[in-house]
Length: 114
Image 1 (cartoon, rainbow, N blue to C red):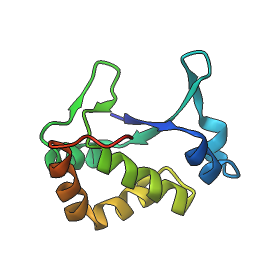
Image 2: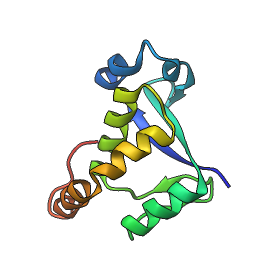
Image 3: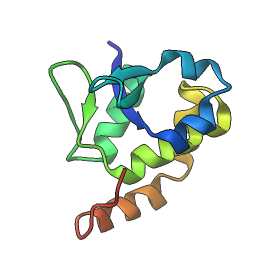
């Protein structure tokens, strides 16, 4: 089964991906005020994400939700760097999973903006 992670795209993030095929995959929300990039996640990667972050869950739409902001930021940065929203980006994220988990622990005290 394929799951999804939704990444909100603001103007700064849009600038990072506007010249890539990813920009064509953006979907509008709230009357076009917000854009979202839906990243496909295969079952193997989804299981690993769920194992790393016990508070994460799969919602009724098949989206991975309640992920730490630090994870979503790292995922977007990896996507912007590799210009791909696939396993390559997730591999980059998992390379620094310990630092991401540490930042996620701090989010319980203060939730940073996404």
